[in-house]
Amino acid sequence: MSMRNTLSILSRAALAVIAVQFALASIAAAQTKVTIGVPPVPEFVLPMIAVEKGYFKDQGIEATIRIIPGGQSMPAALQSDSLQVAALSTASLIQVTDSGLDLVVVSGGAIASVDDTNYGIVAGANSGIEKPEDFIGKKIGTPGLGTFFHIMAREWFRRKGVDWRKITFVESTFPQLADLLKARTVDAVLSTNPFLQRAAAPGIGGKVFHIAADLPDRLPPFVYASSRAWADAHRQAATGFKLAMDKAVAFEQGDLPATLEIFGKYVKMPPEVLKTLTINKLDTNVTPQQVQLWVDMMEKQDMLRNFKSPDALFRK
Amino acid sequence: MSRSHIEFLLYALPAWLVPLGLLGGIEIAMRASGIQSDGLALPTQIAAALVAAIGDGEIFVRTAETIGAIAIGVPAGGMLGLLLGVWLGLSPRAAQLASLSIELFRPIPPVAVIPLTMLIYGLGIRMEAAIIAFTCFWPMLLLSRDAVVSVEPRLLEVARMLGLPYRQRITKIALPAALPRIFTAVRLTLGIALIVAVTTEIAANPFGLGYAIISAGLSLRPEVMYAFLIWLAILGWLLNAGLVALHHRLFGAAYGDVA
Image 1 (tube, each protein chain N blue to C red):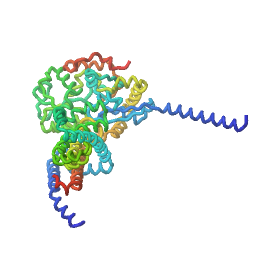
Image 2: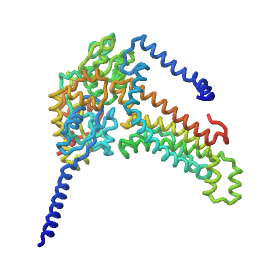
Image 3: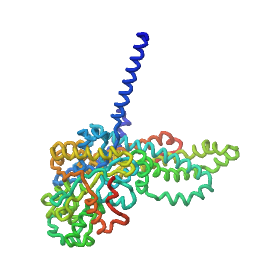
Image 4: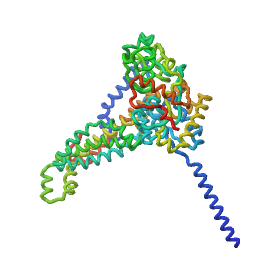
């Protein structure tokens, strides 16, 4: 074999090796693209952290965050594959499953424990409301009728022995609640932070009832869900999503200021509001038993027709 | 500046004094009462927010998204409505057959088709364009049908006597005669399209100016919310003024003025 031939074979072999290297590298870099829908509320900061800190990337997930105000459009967006994962209130997940959509939980989100002060009913200053019975015949401004918040409040009244059917709930958006209370258009408002603090400000709000204290402990207010079809087709990404979120929880617990800074990148808030934000206890673990707590509340409020078992919401 | 420009400004100025005076009044009243609200902002804060949004370019990105959806939806729905309208205008039998269906489907509010379009197209420009197309289809259909119906009948008779084929009757007689009215229909349709686009964005679609308005409201930045609202008003006004000017230029001399 001539020198020239040997060189030619060697160079071809080298080229082949390089080509294979490139192919392998591109397979390794082929990441699953996931668009995640979350509302503009600090409780949904985990996927933002996982993007910013590269936790998703480590799991082979190329994630994009879409901030979507209000949760109503999330289930349809999952169904049409505009979003692959979306934060849904657990109540809404149960309700759309009850109506026939096939969604599954890919990760937990947060836990409302009994010592949680993030969910409250703020009575208006001089409204004369001091105890649960005083709400009868009164009007409560509510962010979304039939939403998880409304369900929690009705359950709270039930546990306090007050018939919620004798209370009028009127719908409003979060930022308007404090104004409605101030103008006495409503007698009380149902709210969460940072809006709760603003409604409870002196001169506007009176007594604050922290409703989580009297509700089941470890209630998951929301979860991250995907369509079953997506989760089945992307098993690795669906599992990796949860692992990345676990890392994000550790980050959030270790560094709240940095967490809020990341949140501020995605949701532009006035700096003075951003500083006062608090975040509920975030937890990515959720069980069918915890989901059942919601099912129980919703059944008592006549909200479900066909719902069978929360087990079906979890991937095997 | 020429004399005519100055005269125009002097003519237009009093009309501007009303909104400006109103804003000044609101500013003074709000400062005097020391009002604190998450839903209101001082006109001066709104102006500053508007300048900032123009400065960082966000307003243009959002505007492009909204206008983009309109630029797809209006031609799609409008062309379909126009073609069908012209046909119904020329053929009384077709008009009679279609009348019930039109009256049944026309009153469906565009916002009511949001969930359906979202399931089909998902979030994004296609869904919004589909809703806009649905909205524009009906007024375009009715207005172009009426425009063709009111074409001077003798023109069509002459066309028939001359033995013009059907296609040429449309392109040479019906369309040119109906064009000014069809253009009015386009102008009205564009105004409706802007409203529907922004409504869709506020209700469901995380794009465009409506999304910017609702996001700013929810993140406790009322001044930004109102800045976008005012920008929207300016945009609507510019759009209409531009189309009126175009109408004058194209048809003004031949067909008189438009409102």
